[in-house]
Length: 337
Ligand SMILES: NC(=O)C1=CN([C@@H]2O[C@H](COP(=O)(O)OP(=O)(O)OC[C@H]3O[C@@H](n4cnc5c(N)ncnc54)[C@H](O)[C@@H]3O)[C@@H](O)[C@H]2O)C=CC1
Ligand SMILES: NCC(=O)COP(=O)(O)O
Image 1 (cartoon, rainbow, N blue to C red):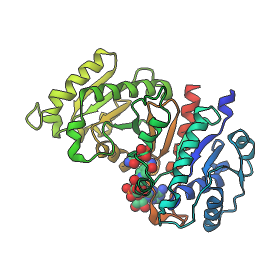
Image 2 (tube, helix red, strand yellow):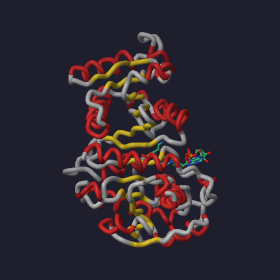
Image 3 (spheres, rainbow, N blue to C red):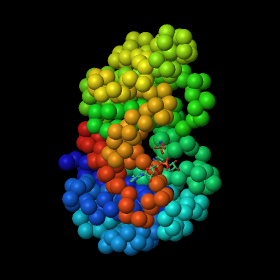
């Protein structure tokens, strides 16, 4: 393994009132059985120790830098300490912890950009609590694009949900459904397809990615009879993308696209809005789906679920999706090495 491949993965603590910390601690406890690569948690060490005690997990925590994490990981949970006010109150979000949650993401990204860590794996955040602390991004996806902007200009961040060969991308992400038709534009479709094609090649080892594009309206607009966007915006954008060498097919009716014999013909699906892309993955693989951000200079993955306040501190949350996110970050960095 080269120098960078020996670096640990950077795992962010996420919302302290949610299940993210529980799953990080559980996965550390199960790291040998699951054969997980070394990781370092960016977060509040005292809080993580308190949550481990609550869960009945006997975990020794060591504060350290990424450089020492790899050798310590065999015996202790490496934590890059982020100072601040964080209390162990499962299910009860406290806006006072938001600066620590945000600083943990910033520090993990900085360490990864500097090559001290290999990739970032984020635990879920509670966006409402962060907004009270001045966070101005819809989610990690857009925040990470800003943090990694080179020359001050962020690239287009693209959210992808993945499970096995099923990969779906929402063209529009966290926006009200009433705004979606106005945001479905030719330039956004062409740029999103370009980011998808490049990352599928570079980070997933798919030499010639074939991408299905869903229509916006029922039956992809039925030749314009049920909405004009499919014929007037999506179809011309796909023609442009194909002229640029991208193998994009569509617009295809979204309701039948996720019938397995259909989606299996493609390496990924570009959907027009959040639920069109996320429902298929969460329906077939809620327990194992992974959220990946494409278009960044670094690899970032996360579990496909949220903070699940009702399960925090109970030990009942499934660590499978978080484990899959760690494994996928590892595989993606090996792929591009
Ligand atoms: N990457 C991120 O930071 C994400 C953050 N969120 C945030 O999470 C919060 C809650 O969102 P919801 O829509 O309620 O989704 P959720 O994923 O937190 O919960 C949905 C349902 O799934 C269950 N669930 C979730 N994870 C589970 C696990 N690991 N094991 C067993 N059951 C599990 C929950 O108990 C609940 O019944 C919101 O504030 C949202 O913004 C949501 C998705 C991703
Ligand atoms: N619904 C997916 C989600 O909320 C994840 O968003 P992000 O924090 O990864 O941008």
